[in-house]
Length: 98
Image (cartoon, rainbow, N blue to C red):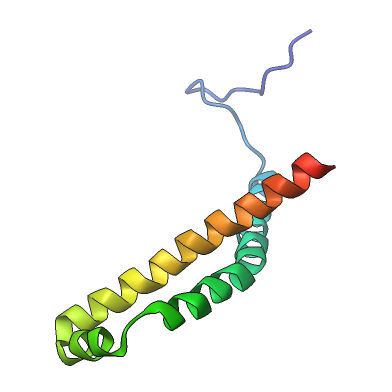
């Protein structure tokens, strides 16, 4: 029995457009639900991180225009990374307990 995909003249697999759209729609939906799932943890990390920073350092960085934007991007991405790590640790602990 042959379970391979049908091939076109170039030897590449033929794909059906509705299946490709369904596949990419599911990928986008998965990314969206992951975003929604990680967002509360990111907010918690941002809240806890805001309490830990000193106001003198924040005002110094805010006074420098270019550094201000770079620091804001770095701060937001760092909180997302830490939020994702916190989310994954909680998911692993939950999976082990089951």
